[in-house]
Length: 317
Length: 256
Image (cartoon, each protein chain N blue to C red):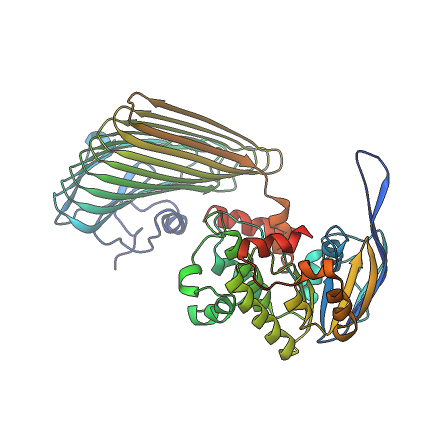
């Protein structure tokens, strides 16, 4: 297998890039199937497959991914690494998923910042999911580095779901990102389904804002938005969820947060039923780790600190 | 193995702003491999005593010795590491953690489905159906209780404390539960202290301790204590478990 970083445009720190790619996309060698690996604003590796074509946009502003109708069981990897302090990257990636296709897309972004300047990546991903198609989309965000420069990630995901299509999105931000504003928008046609699972952990003085906005336009379409988060230190999290039921449809959003130390978590749900057969639910729960949970794990021999860590690990698993 | 010396525990009530004694000068010895059942009216201090042994509550006076070592000031996890385990009357729920996760934390060993089955089948649960279930609101109170008991069994500790294991368990599981406790007693792998109201559990005890109003009202062998308990007609209603359904069983465990 080819090395990921032994390309015509090697990254500044190959070992760091490799580590981050492994963290955000779980890849250690050249991925199978179609892929595009972007480091500091440039593609260092790209490959299309027989059924999935990746085309660059002009001026390196992103890529277009075309999945042929009926494609089954294929993967697309499009990870992004920012390894240069002070680098601000913005990318527009558009996904065109053909009818009845069934694919997995692994995205994600990692920032390594050892410098004093702010490093930022804004990934704007737009999905056009064809009739009857199924997509599982995984997006991990991660930051690291010893510099004082901030690590900022502002992903935007826009999903257009055609009739009978399905998109499941798993979005994870576990550590190291100083500031993030995560916007996800969706519109659904008849019988389309959207499932989003978000997991976030913030610490120190980090900020994380999540905005969901979903329009349930089709008959019998549904959306399920689930956010689990842990806020530590002096961090701040805000969760905004807006679901409009414009037809006979089902919408559910859930924000479940553990708050620790001096952190702050805000949850603002908004559900609007514009149709008599729209069924919409929002649930929100914010609270500290229950003392009895810590006590239980301590009776198994864990220290208080380890008990808290296990509870958080399980919660965000 | 375990010695409680002059244990007292009191709390200050907010309303009356005065001290209320929950336990008063308790002296109790639990021998190696013995099977001790602590019983008595609700509110008498039984569960508090079990929590004091585990370290969940700290006594206001007295000493706790475990194998001759003073553990009075040790924390919960330190006592757990010495070989003391506790099954809660009302098990705790965890979002995200599965049955398998908790059994791993309890035993610190990766177990395959067959090994997990050994512990879960004892309490009437099929491992294949439960190992990946989250310990959350999707499990009934009875299921949680059985998992709690299986977890303590899996730990294989020297001193096992069960706080009303029968509460919330249906009658079918109760019969199995009795068999589990009979097996534990016969294995002689460590001492067991059970807080219970049930005659079937009292019947398999080596030693019965009655705690009432924070004090040991009576203590002795099963042969000495059980006939006295059963001869009391009002006590009889609450200790006997025959002919009752699961809900009533649960109610009786806590109502008397």
